[in-house]
Image 1 (cartoon, rainbow, N blue to C red):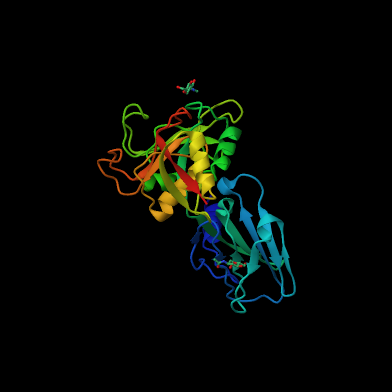
Image 2 (cartoon, rainbow, N blue to C red):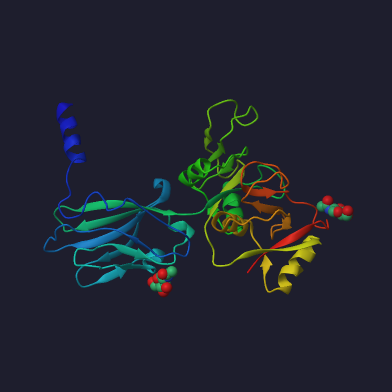
Length: 322
Ligand SMILES: *[C@@H]1O[C@H](CO)[C@@H](O)[C@H](O)[C@H]1NC(C)=O
Ligand SMILES: *[C@@H]1O[C@H](CO)[C@@H](O)[C@H](O)[C@H]1NC(C)=O
């Protein structure tokens, strides 16, 4: 036991010889569409080596994906990420990778590995996509999505299923939601800031967990994640039915906005509009950045929902996206 303990200590305190450690900064953040650099700096160069960059899957499910392998002469990109990757080469010891046009799925842990056949070394860097988590419910009511349907529902609203760390971060930023939803890893959770008996009892504030659920049979809502987009969201006032709202946007060369578009505008542009408006999924919502008594009366900022009203109701404006 002593020996094993000693070996474990030695391993964990083992200094890297060739790569700079710890990483210059262990987390890099960027929004969808941004370019980022993931740092990896050599402190000494072995005579022969390759640099291999891989992406470890979020939540450690599935295989590692190789992004690129490079030596002094050649650069070989792999897969979807490889097409958007390049080496920065700011100086002779620079093995940092640049990723362009970030996508929602790019978040996760990346590994820079120096391979020289003798002592391979690696450092890990986390790329965090800056974004917003939103709960999403079927128009048919609460808890109607299987895992696959939840995934599709998020994609239809310009998002992806959120990871646990994205939900956790959203909770620290104020998300309190009393309906359980699927996360990317197939677990089901909901975030509670203000404990109440109907939402998991008087436990401490936190993320309530149902653990992993049956992806094919169990049904819940979804927690979706989205980030900035290349368009803009604007409101057209009116007393429209759903069809009239569709046309109101079309007349100005736009489309009804998706739920993800409205959340991104709220999160990144502090969009504030105290009027319910139709969205493309048939729901009616409005974004509030400066909470005030006359706009729903809830003290927290957020995107409010009127659910999915009858599409023939002539009561709401239109949120368009262009
Ligand atoms: C990102 O990088 C691509 C090329 O890799 C370049 O065309 C584009 O202008 C860059 N975008 C920004 C915002 O720097
Ligand atoms: C919506 O309202 C119209 C008119 O009041 C009614 O005919 C229709 O059945 C309603 N649709 C639904 C789905 O409730």
